[in-house]
Length: 560
View 1: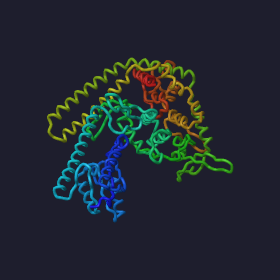
View 2: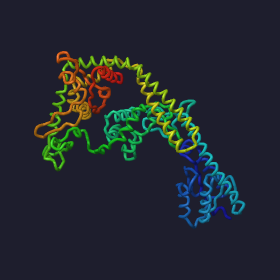
View 3: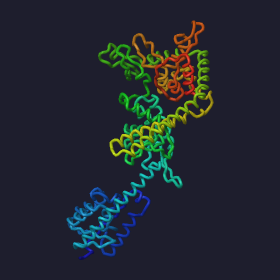
View 4: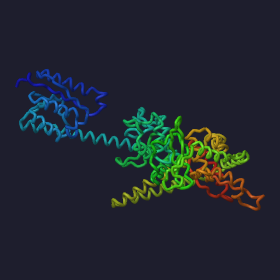
């Protein structure tokens, strides 16, 4: 055969982008193939590199697909395909045989630098054996990689792509480890904690929260997707533990820093499994602070908002859009409605005497909380020991059982108990001596209680919504003719009111009664947490339980 009439097509291949970027696999394969073509007297017509695994069908590889299309486009030319090694053509036995048949149908032969390929039955047998060997090596390599990955996961190291808020850093002697990636870590933490305590009512609100940070990861369209929010809120990796169904790992303590507690994560899952909230409004904007917080006085449906364009300027309105309502389509100027609601908030400002009394209550609660800490720790330790005994009992039953269903049930119970143990351990850790001074913890609470209107008059939409969530226990009913109806005041202000009106008290006559303020831990924690919001209905505390109410106030000061 006259080799000078043959044109060579070179096919180099590596398995990954890492090999392509950090190694010289493609370049060295092409160099060797060009040297071989020169020795044979072939003219190199083109090179078709691939960066893809050798497993599976050859048509999945863009380089090989282009090579075959190049041959089909020139049916009158005679080609020879050169590969550095038979494994470069394929590491799958069936795919290799199909590729060889595809070349033969086109009248093209393949030549390999490391072995001679012939047409005799013996040559085909050896060629098939070599192709099978390549497939075996690929599967063995895959098994080894999977085993190493599982072993590293079982050792407490995450091996997959880091979620938002984490990044990999190489640590000498330990390999790549997850570390908090700021500011994304703080953004994710705030989203979890805000959703757990009610600051964010829906996942749509978290989506908008994420979208407000330019550095937060987006898709190709520049959007923060709903799936991204769901994946973030359901990832237990943020608790410092590793879970993987593929590797059979459940709540294994990892070597990375936790961004949130397991308790916070469980609260988020409970909220996600609750009542479905309204979907995201794309046009919510920052123009109407009362949207969603004020209802029509006639039908009870939340008022909508809109802009109206006049001859010289635009006008902002609230209005009811319930067609069966008497107030349907009747607009209320934004400034009028928000001004009247601001007047309600201004009346919530307590006297200096009440603020002083509240301060004394907080002081007493702080001391009570410290005195109870040791008792709480001992109780938690007893519960942990009891859980450990239950786990040991279940493990013994698993060893004795031969029924697969029973074993699976026991394993599920063990997983639930281990998760409960983790939450208890975190709660005990939170019983440690509080950081910071009492005054530092008290300041954010009293600042709001003393003058909520100060935040309202800033005009900032986010702050106004925060004030609404903290000041009122329910939506405000608004009559377009008579104005806002008497709203249900939130617990902190209601408690201060009851201190002075004598409705909640116990003891002898009116002049000797001891007033019993009602303030719970959850509300106080929300007041102290920047951006927190939520409504907790008041409960009555009297007699000996009064000290427990004060102790609950101390929880706020400790959390700060």
